[in-house]
Image (cartoon, rainbow, N blue to C red):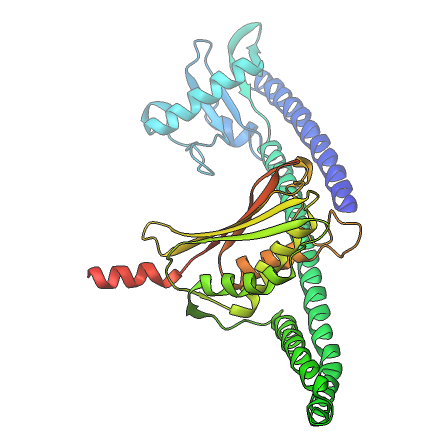
Length: 398
């Protein structure tokens, strides 16, 4: 980018210098024509062919009263040249207008040379610059626009590459984790079966095997979640409240009850079924609840989960997860969903980033921080949409 910008700057300076030289050359050429016209008698009929032959500069010769007599290289519209063989009185109105406009512009720029023959003023010669100057300015402007577009595309490409690289890292990490967990899970299955066989001799073995089976099912659920990262999950039409209740049933017995007390409240309204993946959406709720627990620094903690219908047809579902923890500093509200950001002393800062990916990329919904006040708490909101609900409504109305 620096090299291209430097070359463009050098090119622009060269074009500006060339434009300046072309202007000086047009001025000197007009002076030579004025001198030639002075030496030759102006009453000759082959004026244009004889004196102005070969000139590329725009020229206009008028009488002393400003009546156009002869002209050359005057443009009318775009690249159309004003006819040089038809008398001024018989020209088209647009051609006459172009000649008068050139005369006025030349007067403003002071590009007028008097034609004097034998001490008697015979007429005036108006001249302009080569069209090259205007084209050079256009080329310079086009080059500047090109470098700006190149810079923008380069920045956009780098952002896409960074996002893709980050996404591939997440996918690789998740799948490798699921793969690595497969071996110990298989071993645990064998040990649990062995403990069940021994339960006839040692009854405690049966109870331990049952509890370990619950934990093993939980571990399998974690593996299933990680294995779905990076692939298109299957979405099924179902009630999101069932997932919320299932996650709440898992957390309520495990909430702190000694050094601090945390309660989990549910306020779930009747909502429409939404297409979603149960495992992944449950992962989102778990991450938000765990973050709320980590943010609790008071003896009477509270986590509240609400659901309600929303949208024009009330076919969408909004879910709010609120806590009364320490809150998020205002300067970090924009960073909470960025990979690697965390307010904890330990952790990778991927929980909320994964939650955003699951809700927005896999489910077409939206997740955001609804509010956060230091010392009072934070509220996260999730919006889940049913894209087929509006189509079903329209087809039913039809």
